[in-house]
Length: 184
Image (cartoon, rainbow, N blue to C red; front, side, top):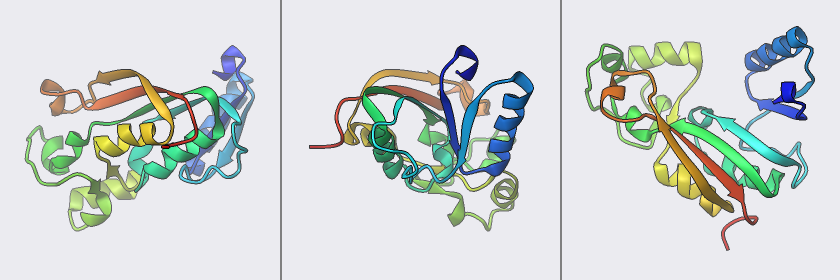
């Protein structure tokens, strides 16, 4: 987006991710504003500050997605667009170690939290490298956007890179437009 001339702000809780963004900025001679913070609290931004938010598959790193949708609605201008990607919750019902071996063994319920499964060596190992994962209901993912004041105007599904791709799309993206400030 910055390469096309847009004013871009990257907001992320991970300093490592922000460092990667800065590397690309310096390498390619771009300008972006990087800010570290929790996506559930966008108080560093004024109301109606942005025309467009791209929220790519980061929902899995937050325990409660509903405050994120409310904050996105607050900082987007009226008729602003939110593009969001997230995992199909069905992905989180399976035993992760078995899934990586290609075996579909149902083990968990949704909503899912790695914090409840740290006794599982595979889960603990992945959390140590990649952080804690949370699987949200479709109600929280989609109705949560609607309750925050968005109208879903686009929907897309894709594969996610596991054996589940043989049976169901595990990646979901929505395009939403801000209509008002929240549920009336």
